[in-house]
Length: 459
Image (cartoon, rainbow, N blue to C red):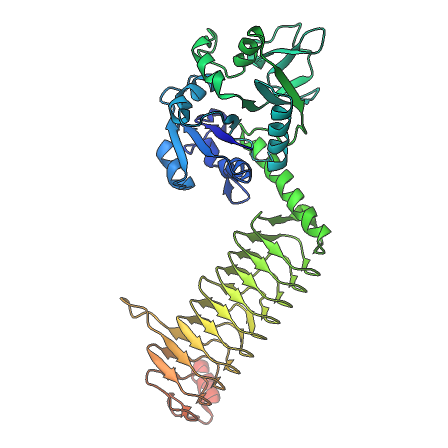
């Protein structure tokens, strides 16, 4: 279907009480506007125009899509004025239908938009829009029909009378219109009480011109807008619940769905079990048969099959291969890569580190800017001293190395294959393969020292 899209995203969002443009507030890690944009892009419009106003440059920077035409609404004079501002960006669209929708409705789906377009085309309408039935919500325009059921106008909520306030069919704010209607924009009149021009007045204009106008009912949830922090929270919960139940249908177990957060860009394999208070964020991919225990936060990371993430672990922008175990209380900072069957235990921190297969760092260690081979044992309390105050340096630990507890490896340094580092060693020079590195003072025992100390106190 040949069409162009206009997304209205210029509103200040006063009730959000924020310095940030309303459409840039996030729902599950993505701007509100991005959801609307993604839904419409799925249908391959010939052109997308976004009308921006409050925080315009911030919106441009965050969306950052060269294929989009941005139009600035200098004075926020309502939705009708916003469409008029977009008119110049639409002069080259020919006979394409125009779909106009609000940028603060992140639950709208491509299927619903496609359905509106098909009905608009099949019924040969001049102007179409989505409506919904609700007895309780406020803030939405009422759809007025004549005695024959024909749509004749939309009355904005703030202008309703006692007579039409009881109407339950409400305007969903998603419109399909033929391009000729742009010539009617100069007929829009400013409403005295609000000082705004309304796109909804085009319904009345089209009806009086004898043009075909239709409204099509859709689920109220999809066209729900966001105007307050409370509504932002409610929409986030709706979308999060939808995502989780879709994964459950695909074979993923959630112990407590209501206490788990999953971003829309996350993927999860079959028979993986997700415990409560887990946050799966960004472009995260989790394989099959994994277990993610409570309190984990995994962001922009890839986990293979059979990975076990224990309690209270943070994994950021990292890659973990099959059958590895991380945590509890571990922290994988960005650009860390773990091989197969690796164990990263409690209170271990990695940063920009590569760990080979079957290597273990079981507790209380920091490995930063390190390359660690296969079958390596990292003893408790081991630290790679990677920063000299000016630059970061690499520590290289070859395969089959045993690093004793409480060791400091001062980079740049290489521990050769099969070497040993004695407990408590401070290694400042390369260790040859198969060698033992030891750096500690010789132990000296002072006989009867405790008794002499006790006697001295008594005197």
